[in-house]
Length: 77
Image (cartoon, rainbow, N blue to C red; front, side, top):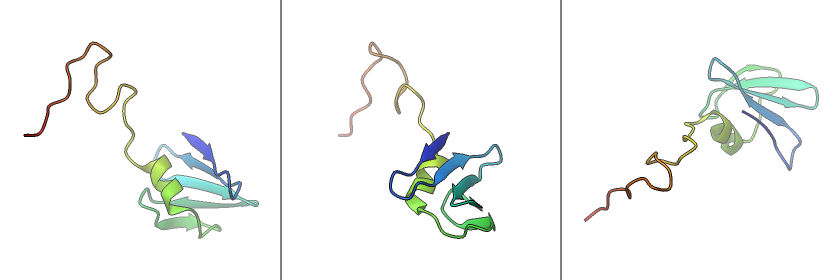
């Protein structure tokens, strides 16, 4: 996944090793999925954008799987 930040113009990309690569103004930084800096010349970034790109990803069918005809999710009593 690669996303462009609409306010800063930085690019955020998830790498195969699970780190998030941030590119901005010719500098690059690697960050842990929780937003902590890992390596590179770029030390600051948007932590929410990093979590969005590097955090857990939902499947294409939502949290309960299945399609339109799937059973309803369990209800809490």
